[in-house]
Length: 217
Image (cartoon, rainbow, N blue to C red):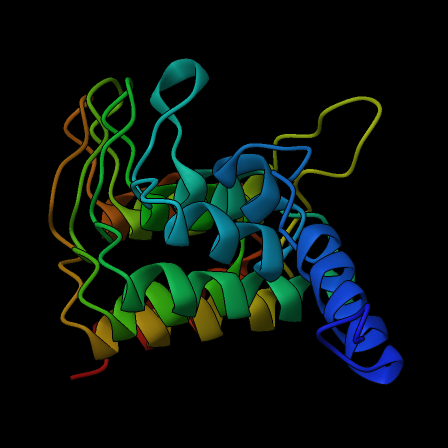
């Protein structure tokens, strides 16, 4: 008389598979999709997308994942590469490259404010509006890039922004012009990026170098 329908090895295999399946279920990440994106956690971002979360889901002040990466990314080389991978994934899964936050800032505008050239390049490659303006100061990415060289915003407790070097500013301007940035759009005070360079406290040699790039056909 047979007591077991299955052999002992088969029973062990069944229990092993059942145990493995139970503990292989993905647990929700600790952070939201936006914060996970900021941390460069691609696996967590993939989890939320696979669960049906919108890549444009907003949090405080209307910031979505792309805003967080452009606005708050630290200057760690490894983290930056991870964040760029997250940006590519989000865009490939329908993220709006021109999504506005509560202040009408797009991810590209934030990338310009914070001097995030690699992030700006990737956004532009995927259709970011190179002449977008915020709702308060009416500045374009070109306006903000120039300001980053003149006076970078510094936040206590974390390095959210850094002052651009002259070469970085020139590289940023060249990048923006490649996507047809308009150097004659006035901001809320009626000042264009071209005029702004002339009004800055740049060294004379720096002004000439920047203007030469801006005016180059």
